[in-house]
Amino acid sequence: MTITQPILPIEAYTSQDWFDREQETIFSQTWQFGGFVEDLSESGDYLTVQAGVNNILVLLDDNKQMRAFHNICRHRGTQLLRTSGKRKKAIACPYHDWTYNLDGNLTAVPECKTQFPGLDFQTLSLHKASVGIWRGMIFVHPDPNARSLVDWFSPIEPYLGPHQPEKLVEYVEARIRHQINANWKIIVENYIDGYHLPHLHSQTLFMYNHRRQQTGFVGEHFHFYEPLAKDYLEGIENNSPLPLINHVPKDKIGAYVPMLFPNLGLSEIESSWSTFHVIPVAPDRSIVEIRSKVMPVSNWKYMQQEWKSWNYFAKRKWDKYGTGNEEDPLASGDFIAEDIYVCEQQQRSLKSPYFSIGAIAKDLEQSVYQYQINLLNYMKFSEKKSGFRSQDSGGEGITKI
Image (spheres, rainbow, N blue to C red):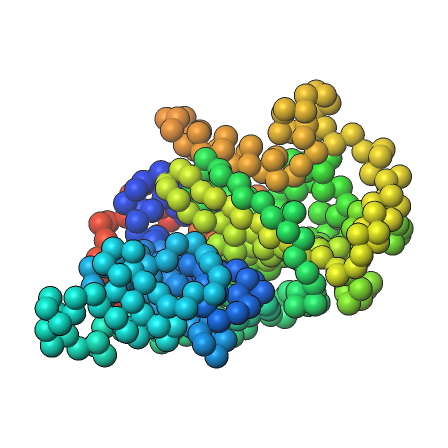
């Protein structure tokens, strides 16, 4: 049976009200990616993470233990720290200099005796949040008593690649931040859509056998695997543009590309391991941050591997329509540029009165359909659990579940 009815209405991709509900019911109630463990190495090192309506501060305390607090001064609510930094001895609010130690306890208040007589410092510690480490990644949760991180990810573990990111090093020059004029769900749906791979990316992801993809959901998490294309695999030691990850057995090699609910993709392939973090900014704007890890070998090894792979890639034209226009994202040779282009085009089309979903591929787009079901069910569950009452989201184009 061909599915033609989408689960989510157009408003889910354009409405500020819907966007705000997602921030409260999804991003404020799930584990959110914060960075790599190596981002914090010394006492006082810190980073901040936006988790729905909450900004979370993660730091290493005096014993180098990782701690998480809501990044809110207990005086008037000013955000304490910005982005990330190194070796803070204490946390001072920029507004009135209320100061906290690395355990989150209030330690100093200017003019306390005259302006705040009898102030009980012990009742004004920073609000705690949850922090955890999984596969070398830092995750935060606004709830100090959140469901355990291991429990949250345990269903997806058997479907991940055999990669060990803790044994790899970050390729800092490959860290990329894209600003995309599209709703965050359009980007996620594109990420898990298996139908577009041999079409949109015919000239850029030809190294993989898209016809043999294996996909599905475990809970809210999406898993994906596809093997390498035969000609690429047969000469993989020479064909790979980067040194192969040596702890991945050859019989397990391929592309493992899960999407961890709600917004973190992993790309675990033959020569790299990457995070694909989709960050909602507005109903029609998102940021995607990509960080990659590779084998810890010399620059000379990387140069040698690049030279060896030249013959395999030199014969590829990279240009989907043969325009020769390097400014055209479909002639860029960059599959990320191709994805950004179609996501932004789809977002623009949502404004047209003629926009509709003609059909959904019963196998290769089933993941998009299922993701929308999971998303809506999670929102309903979160609203019920928290007592949050939203405006009626019913209407035409919504399948009742």
